[in-house]
Length: 490
Ligand code: ADP
Ligand code: MG
Ligand code: ZN
Image (cartoon, rainbow, N blue to C red):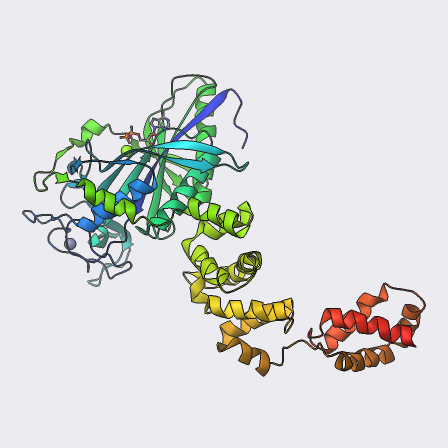
C-alpha cells in the first residue's frame, strides 16, 4: 500500500479472547462449541429477572495468566460493572463487564518486525466480561414459515467468558498491527487460557484507526472497524480505512468518529453506527457481584507456575540447539509444533535434522490434513525419530524416509516392519548393485561407449536408470562408485 508520505497512521487494537474454562463466567453452563441452539443455557445466562450471577474463579486465574504473559500489573481489587444497552442478543439489557477497575493494567508486548528489530506496543488494560448471545437471521420455522423472514436467538454464547485486551494507539502501520496480533496470539497460546482461533471466533479483534499529519502531536479522529476475522483481513481493512480517511481529509472533509464493519468479500469498510461514548452506557458497579480482592500470594503462585513463554522457548531453541531464528520462530508459532519438536529432539542426534523434518515434511502433511495438531497426523515423534535414525544409518534414503511417513499415516505400525514389508531398505551391497549396473550398461550400449569415452555427464543418466530399476533404493554413494569402477574396468 502507498500511504501518502504526508500522513502518519495511528492504530490501537481491542482484542477479545474467549477463554477455555469448562463453564461460563457467571453460571455453571458448559462452554461447549457447536451445541444445539439454547442447550447451554440457564436462568442466569438467559437473563431471567432475579437470577443471580456467581463468578467463576477459573476466569480470574486465566485473566491473571494473560496479564502476566503481557507484562501487566495485576489489580489488588477488581470490580464488575454493568454496561447498559439494548439488543436482542443481550437479554438482561446490560453486559457484565469491567470499567474503572479492570483486573490487569499497564503491560506491553515487544513486537518483532520483519527486519528483526522490536517495537514496543503498550497494553492499556485487560478486563473480564461476558459475551452476548447470537442472532440467527434468515430462519424458517417448523410451524410453516418458510420464507426465511424470521430471526432466532441462540443464547449458548451468552455469558461465555471473555477477556478484552486493549492496546495503546502505538501501532503505525497495518503490518505492525498484524504482527502485534499474531505475536499476542502466540504468547497467549502458551498460557493455555484459550485456543485463540480466529476462524472459530475465540480470537476477535476490532481496530481503531486514525490518520494525522506527519510529525503532528495530536491524533486524528478515529474510526473503529469491527468484524475482522483473519490476520490478512485486518491488514486489508486497515489499508482500506487509511486510504478512505486520507481521501476525506484531502478533499477538505473531516473523519467521523464511528463504528464501521469490514466486508471481506468487497474489501471495504462501511458505517455500522456512530460511535457511542462511554457515558451512553451508564456504567456502574454491578450490585449483584461484590468487588473481588485478589490475594498477592495467589498471583505469586500463578506467576511461579507460568509456562515458558514463546519467546523464551524460541531463544532457547536458537541457543541450545543452534536452530536459526526464522526456523525457531516457526517452531514456536504453534505450541503443538514446539511440543513435537521437543519430544523429537531428545530422540535424535542432530537437533537441526529434527527441526528440518518438522518444518518440511511434518508441516506439509499437517497442512493437508484435517487434524487440530501435528500429533493428530498419526506419526508420533518416536516413529519420526526411528525414520531419521534409519536414514542416518544408511538403511533407507531420505526420499524413502518421506515415503515411510506416508505409509505410517495410511497403514500405521512399526517403522521397521513397514520398511521390511515394503522392501524399502537401501541396496548397499556392492555385488547386488554391480549386477543391476551391469544390466543397465547392457541395455544402453551407445551411452555406455560415450561414458567410457569421457562424457561424464552420463553419470546422471545411469544413476537415474538404476534408481528407476530399484525404485530409488540403491545407495547413491555405493552406486556412483560401482558405475565408475565397472566403466573403467572394461
Ligand atoms: P472506547 O472506550 O471508546 O472504546 P478507548 O479510549 O478505550 O475508547 O480506546 C479504544 C481503542 O482505541 C484503544 O485501543 C486505543 O488505543 C485506540 N485509540 C484511541 N484513540 C485513537 C486514535 N486517535 N487513533 C487510533 N486509535 C485510537
Ligand atoms: Mg472500547
Ligand atoms: Zn447459564
